[in-house]
Structures are given as C-alpha cells and as structure tokens.
Length: 293
Length: 294
Image 1 (spheres, each protein chain N blue to C red):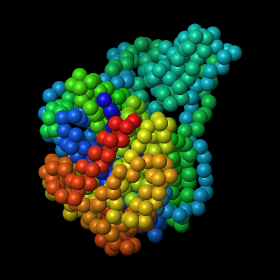
Image 2 (image 1 turned 45 degrees about the vertical axis):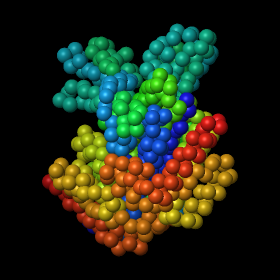
Image 3 (image 1 turned 120 degrees about the vertical axis):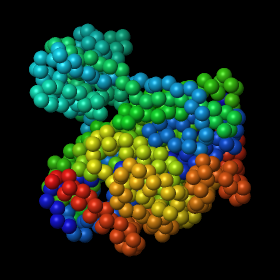
Image 4 (image 1 turned 30 degrees about the horizontal axis):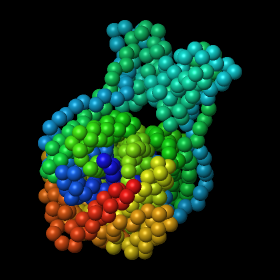
C-alpha cells in the first residue's frame, strides 16, 4: 500500500480538484483522505454518504466554576494567552484564546478551575462514488489545527486501506508549511506538488519543497494554469529540473475545471478530451513513480 | 478619505488562493497614494505580499519564542515540570530533562512552577520579521522558518510590532492566513472590520460559509468581495443575500489580472475596474465604521 500526498504551499492552485480527479481515475483501488481539515472541500466532488461520524477531542480548555471562585485574579496573572477576561468583577475563560496549558488550574488557590476536553471537530468515513472510501473531517471554528486531526484522518484511511487491501491512499493536504502539512507528510511514499506560474506559486513551492526534503520523500510537480505566464512557467520547470522533482504535466488554464465543480464533478468526468487525457496521463505517471519507490 | 480613528482591516478567506494577497497589496498601494497605510502580512507560513513591493528595508529582527532551558546544576529531577506540561514538550529521559521547542506553547508553567528554578525561559528564533517602507506604505512581514510548526506566536508578535510602531496610521491592513483555525483567529481577533474574499464556485462558497461562522463567532463586522466574478455560479450571491451580508465589490474574472498578478505586478493602475472596486471597498468600510461608532 502506497501513500500519495498532494500539497501546494499556496492555496487555490487546484490541489483538491486534481486530487479528486485522481481519486476517480484510481477508482476502487484508492482510499481518499481529505487532510485539509481546516477548509475541507473534496467531499463536494465525491458524493460522500457520511456513513460514520465521530467527535474528535483534542487538547483541553479551562473552565472556572463561578460559585467557588474567590476572585483573587491569580489565574489572570499567570495566563500568557490573555484568555482570562474580567466582566462584572467575575473571571471568565475566553475559549478562543485559551490554549489549554492548564497553568491557571494548577495554581488556583480555590481549586475552582477545571480542564475540560476540547471538542476540536468531527471526522467521517464515507462511501464515495468511486466505489471506495473516503475519510474526511471538519475542524471546529477557531480550533487549534495542531495536526492531530490530520493524523487521525490519515491513520483511519491507512487502516481501511490495509483491511480492504487497497493499493493506494490519496491524501489531499492543506496549504502552508506548518503543523497540518508536517502531519500529512509523515509516512508518505510520494508527494505531488501542485503549483501555478505566478510569483507566489513559485515562492510557496520552494518553501514547501524545503519541508518535503526534510522528510526525504520523492516528489513530482504539476504546473496548473501553465499558460497564464509562460516565462514563470519556464522558471518553475527549471527549478524542478535543478531539484530533481519530476515534472509531471503542464495543465492549461481552463474554465472547465470550475464548470465541472459546479456540477459536483471532477474534470475527468466532465471533460472527454484533451484535459481528461492530460490528467489521466499524470495519474498514470504518479502510479508508476510510486511503485518504483 | 478622511478618517478620524485609525482603522484596522483584516483581509481573510476560508479557501486559499481566492485573492487575499491581491486585494491586500492593491488596496494598501491605492490608499498609500494619498495617506499613510500599514500592510502586515500575517500569512507567516507562506508570506507573499512582499513579492509585490520594492520597499526599502528599514528594520529586521528575529521572531522570538520563549522556551524553557534545562539547568542541570539546579535540577533535582522532582518531575514537576513534565507533569505540568500539557503539550508533552518537557519529558524526562533517565537523569535528563529534554525540551521539545516545537511542541512548547510558551505557557511558562514548567518554568515558574519549578521549585528549584531549573528551567529558566530563554528566547528561541522561529523566523524573521522585516519592516519595509515605500513612500506612504509601511510593509511588515514575518517569515516562519521551514520546519517550525506554530504560526500563532509569530502572528501575534508581528501584530504587536506593527501596532507599537505604526499604531497611529489611519489604516492598517492585515493579509491573513487561509482557513478558520487558530492562525486566522489570531489574525482577525483585534480588527475593526473583516473583508472576506471568495470566488463564486462551490469550493469558494463552502469555505466562505466557514469563514462567516468564524467572524460571527468573533463578533466582527464584515463584508464580502467576490473575486473572479463570472466563473462558477450565482450561489455565493444568493447566500450573501439570504444571510444579509453586504457584498462590497465584485472583481471580474480576467486573464489580464491573472497575468499581472503572476508577474508580481499591482493591478489597479492597469485595470480601471479594479480601482473602482477598491474605492467601493474603502467607502464601504468607512461608512460601516461610522455606523458602528454612532
């Protein structure tokens, strides 16, 4: 079983649209893990049935029992996160600022602060239209995206893939280079980088690839909307060559991707010509490269 | 453009790649034609605003995060430090205390509760803050080192730097990170107004709903800008109408804009409609703020 992770550094480069297209092409051989838990969109293209739902708890949140509080203010003195507010001479925890370190509860002389488990979101297992399964999640508003929910989604997908003897796990990662990305990269067999020929696209690609290198994972790259800026595109191609990243494909800017999306379809279902061929060819290349690893 | 109270605006979106940086940089440059403005790039994981300006670097400093450092000579291995750390950032391996800086949230519990004072807090660099100037525009960015995982401390520090140094400027604009989790909350929680930028597609709408939930939870006044207007469908407009959310401006989908952006150029001087949109956005923010303060 091989794990393919799709990331981009920059958001909005077409990562999810391509992952979903790969999932359709891979069909029943592929278990999908949507690890962009902060703004999960892939379910919009996969027709999931939310067959199984579970709450996800992560970290803690302080809670002040008002009846026992002696209003000494010690909790506020030690809190480094400005998470304790005073209203009408009472102390309250601001759940959006509390990081759950538990310091306040430890030093409260009245022992009136408790730490509660924090509901960080939900995760789901769905049957999807490819005849396979998708593990996905929704992070609660303002929750800490520590990478733990990402790890949960990935591990569940891995277990399903092992039980059901699937060949591939396809992981849709999140933008950026922080904890959730680190979490989606750990254990990957191959990384597909999706970029666009813009100053930001190249800048973010370089930063996220620095991170990929730390994990020592082989990578390929798709340049999406390649015809928007041929000069930038050539610059990216050169960067890929220098770094030994496999240049998988150049995809043109085409509104068919958006049109497919508005119908809840992937590009390989919507288009039956050139675009479908390009994306299919990329998927075949990825599969070959992954199996070589 | 007369403005009495300094106005702090965050430009945010649930979905990445909808045009946060395009709007932030163009709006800042447009305002800077007439008055002082501060643009702060809070997308510390992938800061891009700086690619659109050639400013003069006037200040640079490391972004420091406080972490405990073990002082072996004072430690009695009582174990309190590891017990009080909720993040497993301090552990004991045999006769040694080990600190994992990336897991540490700088809560100070281990350090201050250590009876022997054997874990003093020391600063550790997690990235670099830079302050540029170009005419009326102050541009501040923070860049997290690759391999660091926590964006929030750098975001908070960058905001404090900007407020401390340029708090009197009429306008401060935050270019926020994407998403709805803690980095966005940190970026948005102290602003006067939030501009949510989206695109009229199912992904755009889905993530706009999440972003709206977030700014409503923070009780911030906000409005929506629709970018790449003309692609996709009308569902974003229908949603805003139903939810009574003001649409501040629509920016038409255009290859010309995409081309200018791709080369790191500002757009509003080349595309008159964008200049009009910027003025509309600005007018709307000011009007809303007046209403808020009445």
